[in-house]
Image (cartoon, rainbow, N blue to C red; front, side, top):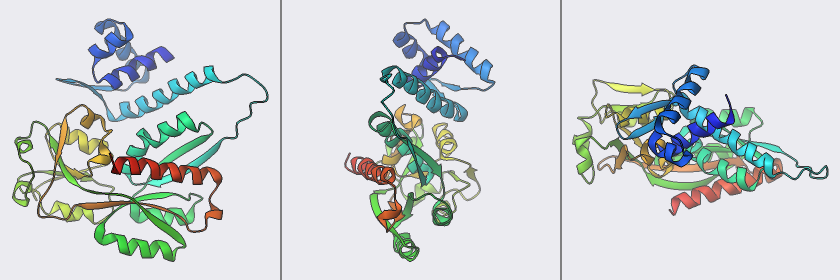
Length: 309
């Protein structure tokens, strides 16, 4: 494994096409395909899935892509460092517990921002469903949590948070929409109704411990429901037009299937779809480190930009 192979793979994922990536890298298409195949053989895993209109990373390929991208950027940063003994950087780790959709969004926005402008801070994102989050925040040294709540859950969790000596701030609000493949005939409609949902198979996260999954399942085909272990697998199933799912559209705007135009979303009439993303942190700011305060501000900024985009 070498940096050149990582660059080839990252460039291919960024372009969503081996042909486009080959042109950018000044390679022939067969040469690039061979290089990626050798990388897959060396790792013993499949990195890319081929579709009629390009390529997307597999689930494990998505992990390799993000880590390879970080390695390439880190190496680039090394060349830019001043080699003086007096340049001492104090590094700090900031842990964030967040629901999976928030983790995915912040990995593409907050982490990139911090790496570019605050290289002394390392943000570590930990996926966690909201029923477990308050317990983990109370039992661990983590001081920052991001939850997604329905409007009717907001008051209950706000009271619970205050009782625990924490505070809750709304980051952004949005209506969930139905995600479906662009090949699904229902994409021609401006919005979907409950009658439309009854004909469709629903895909949701098997780890989701909130009431939202059960709330939505009743509106779909009751004979079968896909229960998958992460949101990437859910959206992959939707891209293949084997199921549909419900998510807030803005927070998924960086997802590879959406960026490649394989999915679209439609509003739903007749059911409650409002979702509120909130920040949870200690009421006493003295508990927070300087780095944590900086990251909290940046988290708020990222969600504010998304809300107003």
